[in-house]
Length: 70
Image 1 (cartoon, rainbow, N blue to C red):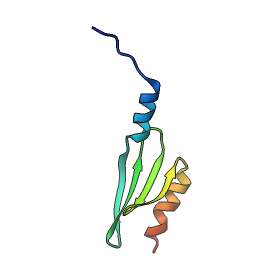
Image 2: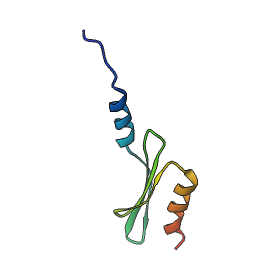
Image 3: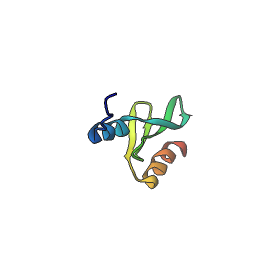
Image 4: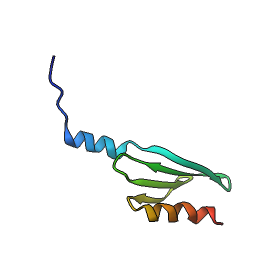
């Protein structure tokens, strides 16, 4: 049996690109979604527009609430 070799860069790339849907809502007639990846980065997307992508929770909440309060 061959040993398993873990490639750190490949693992980082997988973590960065593996998004999980955390929350979804309809605002107007379009979807508002909050995605989280394994590096604890967040992405708030309204329809096809990225409202925020980064690691600051306060910015996530601000982006999420920016459309919901209208």
